[in-house]
Length: 157
Image (cartoon, rainbow, N blue to C red):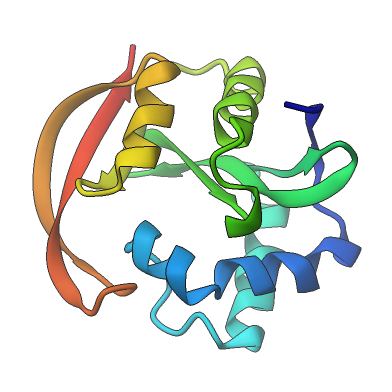
């Protein structure tokens, strides 16, 4: 599989992360994305905010030393949620599963929460392997699909 590692996000990572986060296939799969994934100024402002927030853990995901995505946690309404994004070229190699396991070692608060488009079988599989359990479903507007879709809400005790 190779070596998956986490490290702080660097300024030099931003162009590659922006390209990953605007991949139309990945945006559709993730569904719950920013309104305009092509807005570089908004991306830069968001990453600056995330990187400076005490409530956010944001890490670059590397595979055999190469940047392949990001993983992190953030607080919403008092709940800590996790998120990850892996470059589509690296899907299906166990990288998201390994990166999430590493994040769970860094973020020790429990419970943790996750939300995923209910038809995103890959992400549901990753989260279940990490011990997350589905606790409900909601219907929410997904920018990546420009429609209301069902999302599964998961929790790790």
